[in-house]
Length: 104
Image (tube, rainbow, N blue to C red; front, top):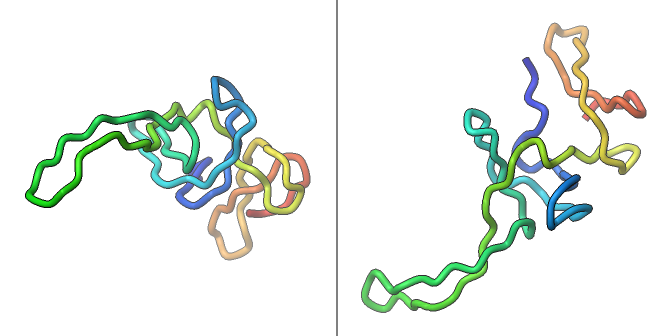
């Protein structure tokens, strides 16, 4: 089975407060159904200094969002598209854009 979304893919958020934002995938947790996207779902964390010399303060960082809330953006047609899989001549399976039938 081919993964729908992988690390370093460009994805678009389709629902929620960050709808229509695009970013690259930092991390995917397939068993939990979560994904971490750069500059999406940014939350404020209040951090205490733990080690000597480490600064404390308020940091903004990304949080995980549901995998079902993002769609991969096709590199050929530049639109968010569903992913289907196609078997190559070598026997491997590759991801394919359902709109333009281009492999990415």
